[in-house]
Image (tube, rainbow, N blue to C red; front, side, top):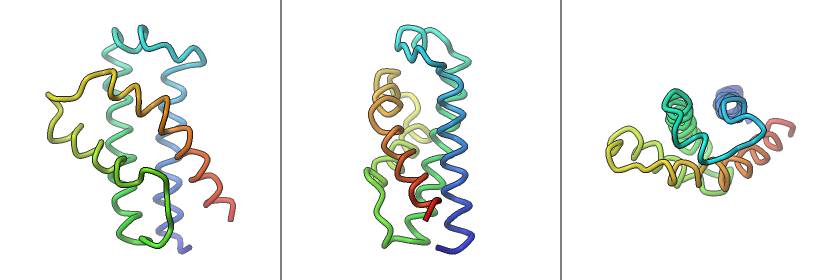
Length: 111
């Protein structure tokens, strides 16, 4: 993998780790649901992850990443359909999809 692909993966990893730091160890939806500052920070990082993923898919389409297309779709919805997104949808991404993506990205960077 060239440096451009690695840079995109590093950007994704940095955003995931930032989101993890915002959520803290408790990772409680009820806390997230009422904290607009954290919601804004998380959504901003999800948008960055989606954009980096989109660029990665264009650059290296042969490298599979679980739910890569869904990550890009989430970015598009956050950006263009922001008024249709509910916190529970974002929470689902945070809890069910980001941990898998983090592992895959780390594995690719370690190769």
